[in-house]
Image (cartoon, rainbow, N blue to C red; front, top):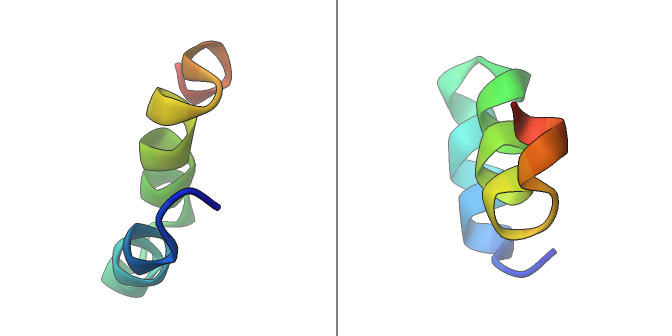
Length: 33
């Protein structure tokens, strides 16, 4: 939500978890881990 660019680039890699990790780092680091 903070950076739609990341959300669109990370998931493109093929790993949805990566996108959650990036978003979690800025939103909910606990969920990312």
